[in-house]
Each structure stands twice: as C-alpha cells, then as structure tokens.
Image 1 (spheres, rainbow, N blue to C red):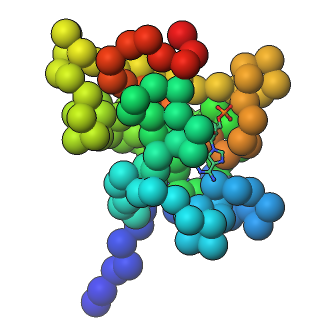
Image 2 (image 1 turned 60 degrees about the vertical axis):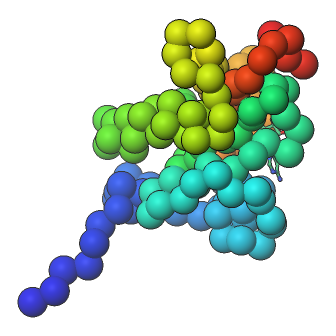
Image 3 (image 1 turned 60 degrees about the horizontal axis):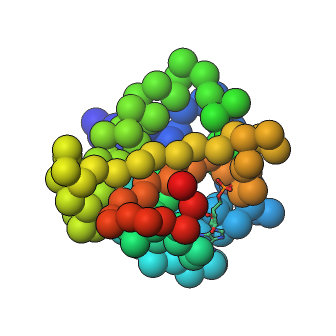
Length: 134
Ligand code: AMP
Ligand code: ZN
C-alpha cells in the first residue's frame, strides 16, 4: 500500500492553498517569473525585484497565507523551517558568516507593519553596508 507524501503546506487549516489574484501565488505557479534561490515542497525563495541590500531575497510558504496575523499553531513547523532556511540560504547567496557578517530578517504585517504584498514572506537581507533602507 502506498501513501502519498504530505507536505507542511498541505495542512487542513489552509483550505485556500492558492489565491488567483496573489502575485506571490503566481510566482509559485510559475505564471510570473522570479529569480529562484531555493524551492522545496513547502517553500520558495526568490530574489526581491527591488533590493534594499546587496543580498535581498524573500522566503515564502507555497501555500497562500496572507500574513503573520493568520498563523496558527499548525504553522509552527513551517515557520521554523523558514527561519532555519533563512540563515542557510543567506550563506549560500554570499552573506559573510556570523558574527562579522550575518543577515537581517524582516516580516512586515498589515498596513501599519508596512506590508505591501499580502502573501506571507520573510525578507532576508545581507551584504556590506550601507543599505538603501536601514
Ligand atoms: P512587503 O512590503 O514586506 O510586503 O514587501 C514586498 C516585497 O516584494 C517588496 O520588497 C517588493 O520589492 C517585492 N516584490 C514585489 N513584486 C515582486 C516580484 N514580482 N518579484 C520579486 N519581488 C517582488
Ligand atoms: Zn498568495
């Protein structure tokens, strides 16, 4: 008997796995191009189109989650995976290792949080300063 693999993105708490109007869902689907950094069953990482730092990419869950405000305990493994990947991919993309170098992670949530794209994403920023944004 075979069992189909279950990914973290397919948790039943996210019935709306894709939003046809969402730009990052379109990037996941491949209908909008991106410069890919990493991909697996749960996550996609791609370079930000308007970088604030020499290294600037975004890590997103493939499933459509609008923001951090929608997270539930069922997303703990997914979010942990994103945070572990952030440091790993920063080094892969050329970040100088901690502590001399390092990287910055930013998650904007809602209007007051400065969120423009409403599909959860973690910004990963690295490289020699100064940067365009602090
Ligand atoms: P936020 O303000 O946190 O919602 O950030 C959204 C980020 O998505 C911005 O830094 C944009 O430059 C970036 N962005 C928007 N459209 C694209 C795209 N098609 N490809 C890559 N990055 C994008
Ligand atoms: Zn989306």
